[in-house]
Image (cartoon, rainbow, N blue to C red; front, side, top):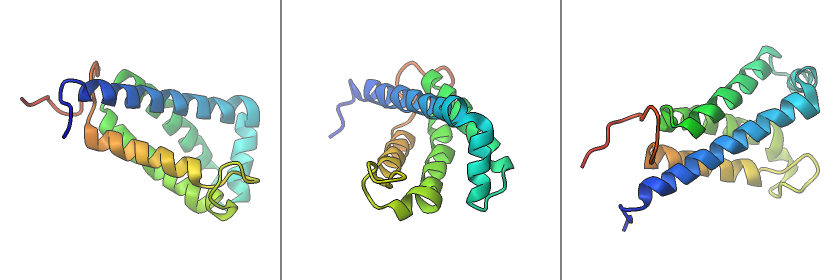
Length: 136
């Protein structure tokens, strides 16, 4: 059974930690790989380079929205789709373990599950703009 007295705080913890992870992830792209480097990487995958900018924006604004609780369940879905895309286009061919050369698909898969769980749980406590009204 769900522990209804603490479930909103569990969703809050999940929501904020996922948001922080996305901000750290986008910071890696911007400050370590650099934006031109990340755009070039997308081009090397045969993807339109403009898509790299959209991923950066999704991760930044999505991370902020998760932390603040702005329509978090709905924000989680495109972020989960992005993580699935990284499995298909980048990490899937590198094997399961994320410690493999090029990073395997273990970490993005777990991240996807966390995002889907957040979608199913809802906004959680202290959301600024809940996706739905709380029903008793």
